Image (tube, rainbow, N blue to C red; front, side, top):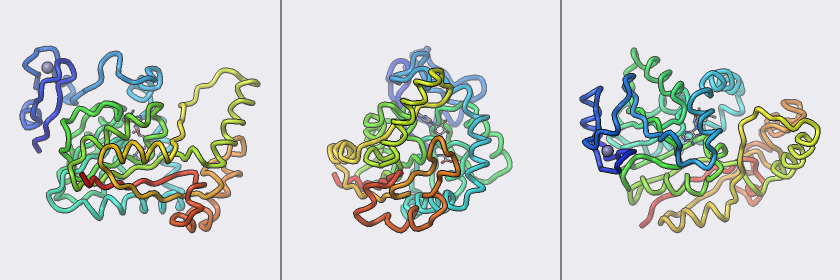
Length: 299
Ligand SMILES: C[S@@+](CC[C@H](N)C(=O)[O-])C[C@H]1O[C@@H](n2cnc3c(N)ncnc32)[C@H](O)[C@@H]1O
Ligand SMILES: [Zn+2]
């Protein structure tokens, strides 16, 4: 598993082969080393993120929350079907020996399904999630190299991965065009990038922003994680500029996965397979609450 990456302090190119052999790897600049728990951290104290508070929240406090939330998602058969559709695109290209990168790997729902003969790498902002993976893998055959970094600034040098994917991640990133450009940058020619976004064109977005304005007026303090919507035209531009051909599928047509303030009672999109899945490849996909993007690097 020898991947080339940039030292977060001096930008020198280092090889992960050294990292694998030594728990105490340090860059020759002397300013960066793998922490004592053996996790390679690429986050600077003041990360490049435009959203420092949210970055810190994900890094230090998100793990427990995601454990609870993922357990709820796991009980939701429609969401499970959606995740299977997402992962099928990855699986089809995760051939033996392929170098695969998951960004925002969470508790390893997708990572665990990768074939054992691929070279797997996992990036996450949450230290707790990465530690969870390391501990729960102690008795499993699958292993992946773990990197604590942000999708907005991946540590790797260009064009090293055959398949790069990020599911349920981009909507937490304010500067999502930079994040998408990063996924594209580390993918080799002929390689595949797959990810999903909340759709800026969806009716859901209109409803949610109206509701958020009302809520802020009534109760100005919020402890929620901010979410962001992506515009398909801007996405295609970023990917075309990076040499990718893009295909878009749309899920949860017209109605969203959650509808504040009605919560699960408002989840018509979740109750109906028709709205959730039937129109994924039709013109109505552009109204989908979630867009699933698969892009192949052609030059
Ligand atoms: C909703 S969870 C999804 C986890 C996993 N992809 C799944 O579907 O099971 C979002 C994941 O993205 C990570 N994340 C959030 N912002 C990130 C960022 N800027 N860079 C890398 N990972 C991030 C979180 O720590 C979390 O593990
Ligand atoms: Zn260095």
